[in-house]
Structure formats: C-alpha cells, structure tokens
Image 1 (tube, rainbow, N blue to C red):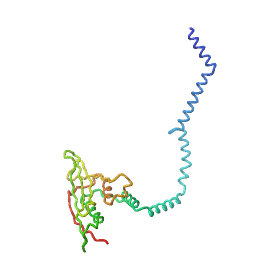
Image 2: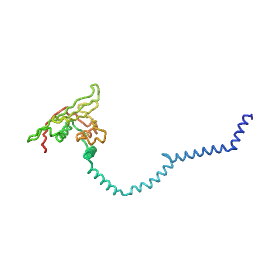
Image 3: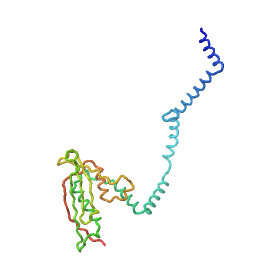
Image 4: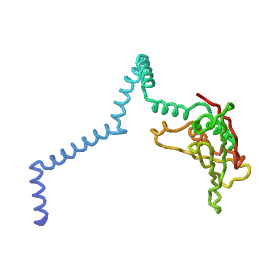
Length: 239
C-alpha cells in the first residue's frame, strides 16, 4: 500500500473515530422520516385518507340527521323581506332572472312570422302612447319586419339580420341575427342573440329581449318562412 492510500485510510479512520459517519447517517435518516411523514399527510397520502374517512364517518351522519327546518323558516322570512323592501330595479332583475330560467319550454321550431307576432304583442303593450293619436276606436300603429343577408357572398356560412320596427315609436326597434351552414329552402337557422353577459344588466332587459335570449338557447330552431311583412295594430286608450 503506497503512501497516498495510507493517508486516505488514516483520514477515514480518524473521521470514523470522531463519529462523523454516524452523524451523517442520522441526519439523512431524519430527513427521510420527515419526508415520509409529510408525504403521508399530503394530498393523496395514506394518513390523510385515513383521517379523512374518520372525519367523514362522524360528520356526515350528524349533518344528515340535523334538523334544518328552523333555518329554512328564517331563510324564507329573509327572502320575503328582501323582495318586499327591494327597489323596483332589483325586482325587475329577479323577474327577468325567473323568466330566463322558466320551466316553460320554447317550441322546438319557430317561424320568423311567429316571432314577429310576439313582437307585435310587445309593441301593443309597450308603445309610447303619448306619441299616438287616439279616437273613440283607439289608435293604430304600423309594425314591420325585414330580413337582410349580411354574410359574405363567397361564404357557405350564411348570416341574416332580422329587423323589427314600429313607425310610431323608433325606440321599439329591435334586431337580431340568424345563421346557418349552406342553408337550403328547408333549412332551420340558429340565433346567438345575447344582450349582455353582465348579470347586473338583467334589470334592464325588456320582455322581448328575454324571449329572444331564450329562443337563442336552441340550435337550428328558427324557420325563415318570410323575408318581410307589415301589420296594423289597434292600441286601446288607457287612462
């Protein structure tokens, strides 16, 4: 054994005598134990699963058997007070939200002429009556609609703009788009009308906008049976 090997041997012997090897092993073993315990308590760890199951076995039966009726009564009372005391705008928001999620289904197929009829009812109710000339029979308003293609001529994806107008009240004007892929005479169209994605603006939606939003929830449910029409409607005088 040469002098270098003897030097190395003497160095290792001295370190062993100092206990350095035992110290390193102890430190590494401590780190290993800490890591193992941490892993067992981490997400998906065995200990976490055991503790979770024990907590569930105690809490869930207790929660299921608890009588919540008193809180339901309190909640009902709070909601009633909110509805009674809320301002008109908040009431409108709640009414519109209720209408949007109403259980009554929109027909699977709707003709443009049918939607026009619904718009006429809306105009009869909402037209600004201060702008009308009433006589003993009431007043007349003239409504109309037209459908105009607005898609690119080269595109197979066809889009049409549907416009509803009332001559006596420009504020009632309403329009929405419908579209279809390579439509034929028997094709059905889809509308993606969306007035707003901001929940706070629900209070500002009118009844017809909500109707079109609900129609737009369907897929290929609009029949383009007419490209335009007009109608005269009698509006009764109301004091």
